[in-house]
Length: 71
Length: 173
Image (tube, rainbow over the protein chains, first blue to last red):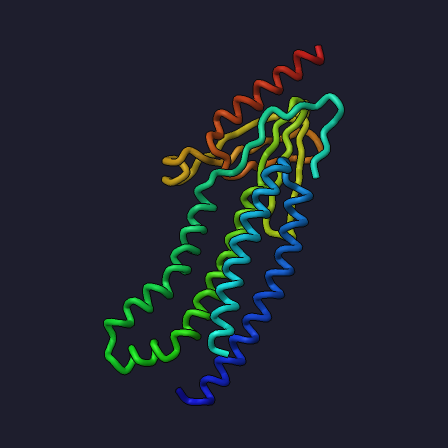
C-alpha cells in the first residue's frame, strides 16, 4: 500500500474518531437533559438511557478495536 | 416541563403516529447496511479492485462503523424528537408539545372553555390508509389556533375533546 495514502487514512481516521467521541459526549449531554426534563415516566427514562449507553458503548468499542488494529 | 393544576387530571397522553418516524428509521437502516452490501458485491468485481478492497478492509470497516455510529446517534435524536412530541388531554385543557429538534421545543395549551371549533383533516393516501391526520382547534383565547399534527385516530381524539368540552360546560352550570 502506498505510504502517503496510509498516512492520509490514518490522519483521517484519527480525526474522525476524536470527532465521534466529542459528538457522543455533546449529544449524550443534550439527550440526557431532554430525557430527564421532559419525559413523563421515570422508569422508562432509565431503560432508554441503558439502551442508549450500551449500544453506543459497543459501537465505540468496535471502533476503538478497528482503530488500534491499523495503528 | 408540564405542571398540572391542583385539581387537574390527565385523561390521555397521545403521541404522534409512528409512520413518519418509521419511514425515517428505515432510510437510516438502509444506509447502515449499504457498506456491507457494497463490500459483498466487491467480490464480483475484477481482481485488481478486489485487492484494493481487501488491502484497505481495516480502514473500510472503520469508516463503515463510524457511519453506523453516526446513524445510531441520528436515530436516537429522531426517536427522542418523536417520543417527546405528544399531546396531553386533561380534564381542563389540551397541551400540545412539539419537539422539532434538540434545540427547538414548542408547548402550547388551550383551555376547553376557549375552544370554538374542532376540525379533523386527513389528506393523502398514506394517512387515510394508516388512519392518522391533523386536528385543527380554533379558539377564542390568546392562542388562536392549535394544529395537532399526525395524530393517530383523530376522530376519536376529536370526540374525546368534544366530550370534555361538554362536561366542562355542565360543571360550570
